[in-house]
Image (cartoon, rainbow, N blue to C red; front, side, top):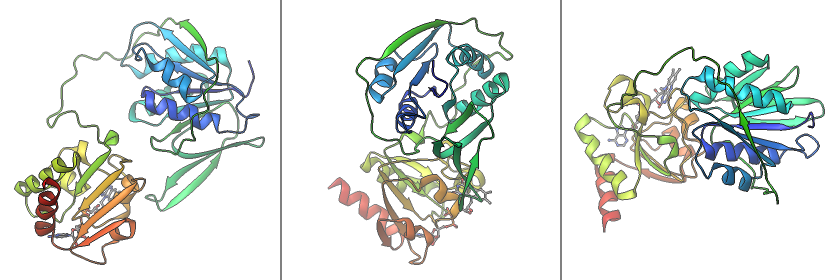
Length: 316
Ligand SMILES: Cc1cc2nc3c(=O)[nH]c(=O)nc-3n(C[C@H](O)[C@H](O)[C@H](O)COP(=O)(O)OP(=O)(O)OC[C@H]3O[C@@H](n4cnc5c(N)ncnc54)[C@H](O)[C@@H]3O)c2cc1C
């Protein structure tokens, strides 16, 4: 086993595949072999997806699925210790961060979460993270390796570099005793929205006068096959939409193909959550609203006229 190997893990297989692509894009001498780890509960086709992304080896750990991050970290610990990688790439999801922190504690690894860029050279591992409300990028260097880097979803991953023969290995690991027990999973009011996964989003901001007017936005979203997102004031202050819809620095970070921002001013804390959207359409009555600087298509006008007109045009 080479000391420079990379181990990739995320409970989200799409993100795990992105991590594999990021690892394969590192200079070959810095990441000669890329391993992906699957834990109990991973989908049957996950091995193939990771292989297609370019993993040289896929390691499947057998056992019982656990929701306890302590148990998950314990299961990973055995595989990681056996592989002796110099770099671990994790998905910086809410769950991924919990597991990463615990694994770093168990193995005494230096760790950074929320990473948006990575550079690995003979001098070491450098990670980039947003700071100052997304207005600046902090570059940090690890003092030692192995290092654990948790990468934010949506971080650019290179094209897949599939390998001809993917090595597949089974592992059995005795899970550590759980430190907490999940008693029940109660669905949240408002359903199971995972806005990070949406391809199209119509986001509403404080330009909306009253809760009942959300129907206008929902109609536009329906006609586009989009999910409804919102700025912080609509979720945290007005409570018109649940936190699942809240986009931004303290909300969800989204990467849709289409982002329609309606009555949204474009505060930096909001932009941080949507700036990687592919095509941005903004509707605002203020021609100088900062959101227009992010927009590919700008519609200056009253949302109460524009939104129904757009919905009608899309329906026809
Ligand atoms: C630490 C911190 C974290 C934060 N995190 C987040 C976050 O994660 N997400 C987030 O969104 N915010 C966040 N905020 C809040 C952020 O700073 C802004 O206050 C917020 O994004 C503004 O929301 P808005 O655009 O809906 O409202 P406003 O800034 O009030 O903008 C409303 C816009 O609607 C337009 N408008 C009004 N009426 C109409 C109409 N009839 N037709 C068309 N346009 C109209 C106005 O011209 C205006 O541009 C955070 C703030 C702090 C301090």
